[in-house]
Image (cartoon, rainbow, N blue to C red):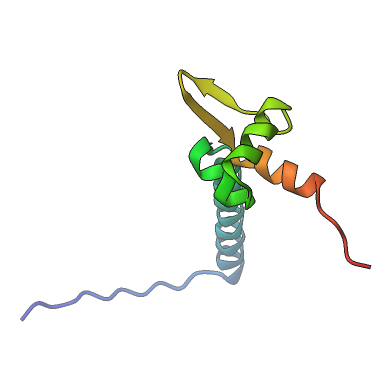
Length: 96
């Protein structure tokens, strides 16, 4: 039978408070990093019409009119998630 060695330590409350604060700061940093990484993700053009709920032709028109920034490498087109969200927010209609 394997013995488990449980050790206990007594630490001041101020130490635990600082430790908790540092953990919360790390959580915030990781959350912010995750959000910025998501916003910088590139999405393939073929997925954009479904995300926006438009036809391929409408998506082509948006590109032709340069309504949404995009990058083109050869025949592949990519759009930043953040640019899509900005486009959608700029067309947001508030309720009365």
